[in-house]
Each structure stands twice: as C-alpha cells, then as structure tokens.
Image (tube, rainbow, N blue to C red; front, side, top):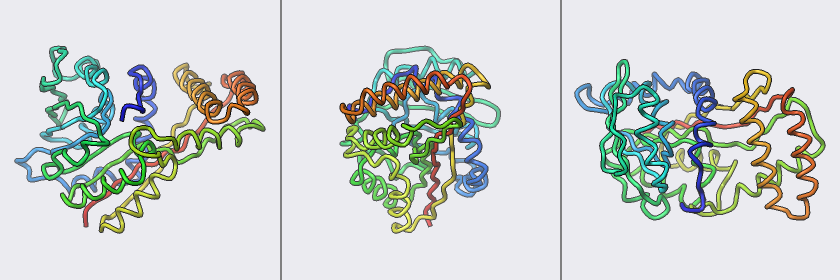
Length: 298
C-alpha cells in the first residue's frame, strides 16, 4: 500500500471533523443498539481489527462507544504513523504510556466504561490482508479506506469477513459529493478530474473511489450480510472556526493538485479555480459527502 501515504498532520487536522460526521452517522445507523447485539459474552473482551489505522483516530472514536474490555489489533503499512500512537493516546487522555520506538509495546486506552489494550502491526494490506486473525475478531473496522481500494481487494475483504462471520464497520468513505455554498463555473470540471484521479492505483488495485460503498454493499448482500449505510458528511463553514477554514482550504489545494495532475492541459484553468475558491473560502462553506457502512452477519 506504499502508494497511499498520509501525513500525521493531515490526519490530526481532519480528526475533529471526522468525529462530528461519525456521530451523526452513528445515530442514523442505530450503531449503539446494533453493536450491543453483537457484544461478546460479558466476560470476554471485544476483539477488534483496525485496518489502515493511521495514528489511531478510529480507535479513539470507537472504543468509548463499544464499552467494556477490548483487545485491538491495529494495522498500517506506515511505521511512522504507527509510531505516533503513544503520543496521540496520551494527548487523548489515555492511561499514561511510555513512548517507545518499538511497535511491540502494548498500549492502553481507557476511559469511563471501557478499557482497550492495543497491539500495533506493520503490514501491507495488499499482500497480507488474508493473514490477519479474522477468526479471532468480533468486528473489523476502518476509516477513510474503502475509496482507496480496488474491486479485487474488496472481494477479498468480503471473503475473509464472510468466512469468519465477522462484522464490518467502515467509515468516512467518499461518495463523490462536493457541495459549495457559492458556486463556480469550474466546480463540475474540477470535480470530474478529481474523481478520475481518485481512481488511480493507490497500492490496493485501481481504486474504486466514490463507487466503493455501492460495490461493497452489493458484495456483502450477496454474501448474506445485513448492510446499513448512513451519510457521514463533513460540513466545513469557514465562518464558524479557523480550523474549518483551514481544512476547507486544504481540500481546495488538494483537489487542485489532483485535478492538475490528472489533466496537464486543464492545469491553468484549475489553478485559476483554486485561486478563486481560496478567495471565497473565508465567506463560504463546503459539504463533502461521505458514507459509513455497517455490515452484520446474518
């Protein structure tokens, strides 16, 4: 998965907006009630695998909502991101942990009503997805991953989960929607180029981009799963906070860079769009479409 690399700073910047979006989606998914029905025996811990875990935002959001004793295996290809875990957990109010360069250290994240023990594993999800301990897991989860993967990888995910009877919770997957409060004539063109760039191979096969959730939903339904989806959109109003404006501008810059790379001929128009969008950012808002998916074995 080496082609898809994300900085710790970017993951930190998006985390509070991810959490707000996931809170809204969780209500629509009836997540608390449906997860409670999956709860292992009260004397057994939840066993969770977190794919492409980054610096741990998915665990920090989900562990308090699962509750009880938990054992997490968190997996990423990037050792730098895995190395950020002790610092990020301590910053989130975790039980104190000693920062260590080794990934063999067992970490803790505790709070009211929950206690999670965490093992980190560096792994390439393209070649090692099937080697993970699927049969030991109650739930496999990931955040902002699906749109990076190809159809073959998606089918491997379904096969592994179905063979083990594991539930899936896959959050914050793009669905292609960008809704600007102030329109620009180039919005649609830049959006198409950006969407095309998202379908490039990120190391897990030619990426599905916005088509990932519908494709996974079909495959899981065919495998006998009950599948639920809900919108988990980012709402970025630049007038509400400096953080919202900063993320708004970062998305504009990211879309412009990807669109220019997708079409060198369109690059001058894309740069002009970027400048106009940045000038409007202080007074405008942006809605970025995402979907959360919960799949429960029948």
